[in-house]
Length: 316
Image 1 (cartoon, one colour):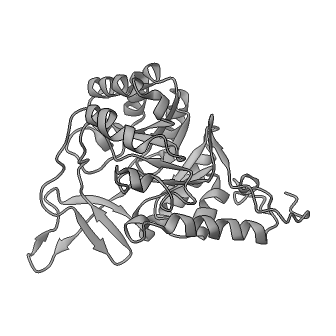
Image 2: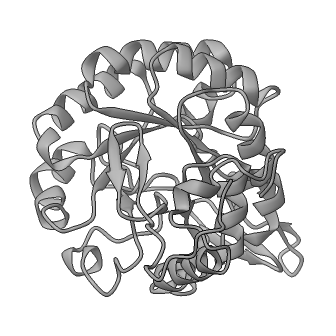
Image 3: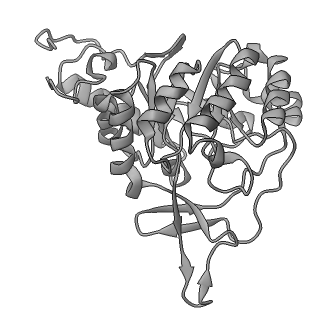
């Protein structure tokens, strides 16, 4: 890589994820962002390339009972359970409120049954002009049926994409689970079955015990662990997936600062999702964006695209 020519212009932060061009490599991950219009505009969207919706299901879900959030010393356990208003209500009431702004909408579609997934995609097709991409969620650990069960095997991934790909002509991403014996094999199957990009990865399974109550915190016992604790694990997954497939990989897991985002990009991710950090600071995306751009300027890089995958072997 030749960074010898210094440019007084700020580095170009735009990236391409398949056929979708984003003004920034930073994406707000599913599950953390309100479906309220004011949060889909500046200043909240400064530095943001796209926003993922909450995980949506064919029918409304009230979510899990009992405790849903538990902070750890270096992360966050959640057992929300895909609480959402259902796809019909989202398309009719929420999507009109959040679309039409400057930031692309990525719809996270949680897979319960194949039939319900197909019905959901048909509803979403009616609003396709407002949707930049579909993110198939085959990795939610907080439900008793479907969710992560689809993403732990090559067969499950093949079934989901076999049902979804013929129904959605636009950009189709798959959000993988790290709770799989061979991430590379699953990633390859997703590519073969027509995925346009992979999001690597969702939360890790963990648990907490309330020592005062002498019992597990969550009614389902286990929950999804996110936050800084999982970043090295997520980075490894991104490195492995990016080396195994030719479609774009989007890094996700524990990103909390510019250096984390840069590490994901250097490992081969073309974009980076940020989730748990937003629960601490709704405006952190702008700071992470600026941290990345300042480092690119220090490196005399003309574009963020110049560094993608450059940490794999050759460096610069």
